[in-house]
Figure 1: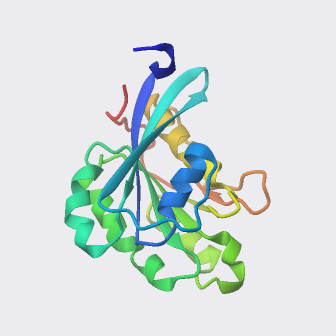
Figure 2: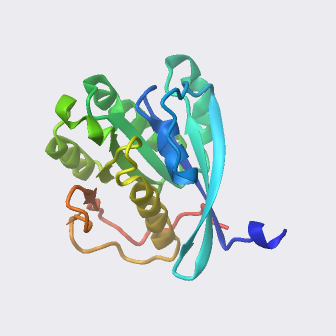
Length: 211
């Protein structure tokens, strides 16, 4: 293994949600800070990775971008296995994509690691004039289901890096048995950033999705 490939931890993260909610462009922003207006729907599953530094450790996140179309759902469910983090994405301007969040959440609960860190992501925040999902509704859903929450825009890159980094940080915290924040809600410095810390009965659980 050469120096560029060395890492201390390897975390598998999946991007899930309906087709056309912006999953591929979120990943493209995180990976290489790019946005493609002509981005096509993912066929099956696509894979990429990115290495970040956290508390002096090198963490490699392998991110699986899953197709949202109905015909691929049986195929992609196998890729949830071993995932210790997930970004569950909906479009803030499309009510149906938000309604289907419950389906995707059940998929994660059924197939992924039992202690998976899930970030509910309301994407396309740049379409605020077309918003159909109030931020407060999504916040409440996240709290009720033990999820983290953030709103992002792959188009203008708002909060994209934060969404991935927060998810990876929480996985790292679980691996090291570090207690979560005592507050149920944490709003990060940017005024338009929303991070909801889930309320859990036991924050001391471990995950086996490392190394």
